[in-house]
Length: 319
Image 1 (cartoon, rainbow, N blue to C red):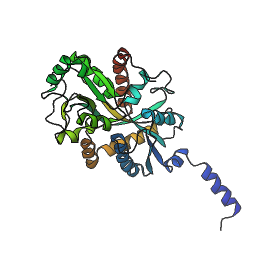
Image 2 (image 1 turned 30 degrees about the horizontal axis):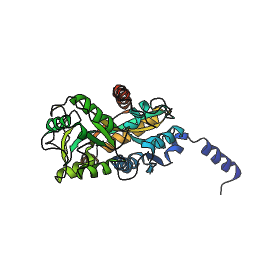
Image 3 (image 1 turned 30 degrees about the vertical axis):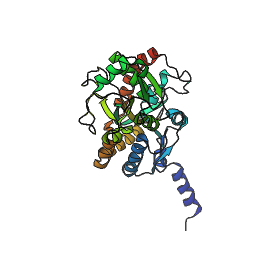
Image 4 (image 1 turned 135 degrees about the horizontal axis):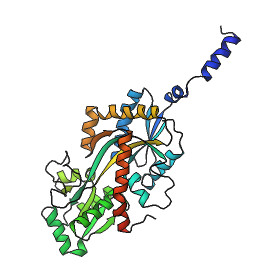
């Protein structure tokens, strides 16, 4: 039996246990600011599956959709910097929103800790049956000759595809009107139905329709061709000199310890090396592209600077 003195000693030892050990026993929660089923949610769930093995810790995904990811980031800002609350976010919420909202409620540089980039992605410029036959230059020439029909769809106002479409318009010298939808799926439906001639969105929204012959992906906006669309040129190859890309990044609250950040970042690196993860990420139209905390911070800063001028020149402000 344990006597009183032994019990007191055991209690003291328990109280003296390192906080880090206690934290590692808790569940890591990856918040996703979008509904289940989208590409960011799928990537988060793959990361959670792999990270729970490397961390030897429970890791779950918690969907908190709303406000284009802002609700998730607001919750992250309020969270303790113990490594148990994280957000996997598309870059738009981090590098586009600061130029759109006067009262965002957080600073995307000061209030969050970059942990790891998981993947990168670009956008597909897709023509539907309302557009004429031909390549990207031919469709843009038709739009220039028919200004009342020169419309392009995106998954929403204030998104990266919205501003990627404006960059396309500027680079091509073709005035185009943006038509915002509530998500990529309804935009793709109207594209297929011939309600709108052109769409700019992630390849995942139209790639299956493209393969089925319902729409035509004319070009992708990255520096290189999309592995899932090897026969589709980049916009530069198609004769329009512009690029637009984005990333999925894992972030924690501000003031996390470097030890915790490195531990989590290594877990992401291990996950992104797994062959099943690599193939699934490619199948989503994304590119598996791990980067550590410093590189993610540098990429975020570069994209934040890159999007300032196009957004301000557009005159668009979020309500």
